[in-house]
Length: 630
Image 1 (tube, rainbow, N blue to C red):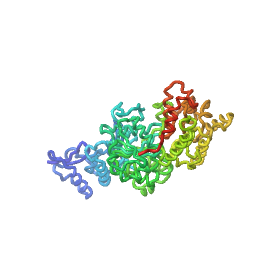
Image 2 (image 1 turned 45 degrees about the vertical axis):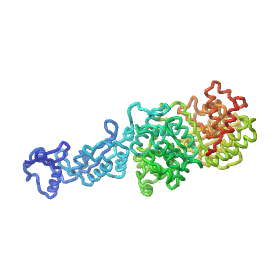
Image 3 (image 1 turned 180 degrees about the vertical axis):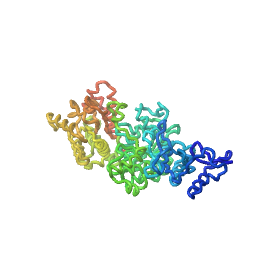
Image 4 (image 1 turned 180 degrees about the horizontal axis):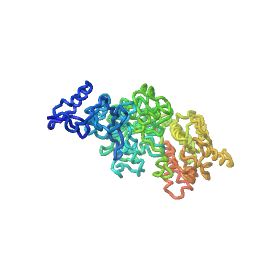
């Protein structure tokens, strides 16, 4: 004898011994539509748990619900809604079998909704009973995108639940890293490692000064017991040497190769050997076929705003490089157009936002469209602001940046170096190296180059200032050279349209404090360009929380006093101090000397008077060359 019974999941079926046939309910539904009360004719009659059921011919709308579970991680459930608007939970069995019983009434489930839900679950690998929780970022993003596009998915998942997917054992730190990490940096490493484990991609968009490079190196070095990743780092040419030095400094076990310049290898075997290959955007374009001979575990784009133009050759080239994980690193992930963001996201997660034509048809450059786009993009962007993690930071963050000249700049520097050596020889003094220092600031100071942004070091300064200004913050830029100060201030005003001024020996002492008052009270982004001697002592400029030492000083005390203009009483925010050093030049020797002198007491008396102790530095400066020899 058979009888209608209910399963614990609320699905009606026919029981005959151990047989269970949910499909029998389809016969009931068909009979109801035809107007025949089939249940009266069944063997056993209206017996068992279904004896008092009412049968509704109106399908329930079904939706998949993504939410945060009790452990804070993503979880899935189902929700039904009757024709009268009543909402109630559904079981996975109800969706799969197409019917359910709720409060004494049997309902069919919308076949369209059920098919769409099952298709999504199959696509994400979650079509099992009980439905498992999403465990990868790709699964969550697929469901979030479906919700945004009007599929039967309800997204109630907060972003922190997605971040919880990346957490590892409490207290776990990356292995092989020679650095003490702040908690937010550990979290950044965990997030990047999580992306790499799932062959996904993301944008590390921390504000400058929070150590994005270190976090990436941690992920390349320790990705969870799999050994170092075979990685390609693509960066502006001027930053390649900085990447090489940071890798050597923070993870000496990583084998790194700089693939750049006329003497770079053309052998895929040589590129395949190291753990990390560092190259420039321009070289990536030229050597695309060579780079595509390696299947990279990760491709990292530093200063990823370089691919904001989807039509640029460099953009097309880097997107063609075969990779499992894509990491974009930029402190300014969004500027004016959503098209720019699409281009970066198309590298990070190809196809996730559709093709460009469809994207631009769906999203215009409006606040409302940006708000609609934000839930889709935010899980792939890790963005921490300085004020958010200030309690984990020291009050001053020092960041040396080693910049590299391109080949033409290096050759021009080499010509100046040879001329200085020919003129002074062994009788040179520190003062004799002035022309080399001027060239490193800008070749135009020697009457040569008249271009601005094209010069590597000046272009890097512009990039840093663009990020400062995008946050509506202020910067102090220190340079020894009056002509350089004028060039910086003029360019800031012309290209960024923000307040800029100079403070050096040309400005009477009585006028200096009024200028600082104007700079400090100005409500908006601004740059003040100072000579470290005229503006490096006795002034309080706490309105700025960024200091850029554009060219190094022989005397470390001069630099320290200059940085102290912003890092002093009255400053409520951490101060970021960046020092821009050109590799293979007199500036590199100055930096080495400065670090050496800082380890000796009494640095304030270190000068430029041509003392005997200066001679080794003079020799080093005259023999150091940025030109690479084969």
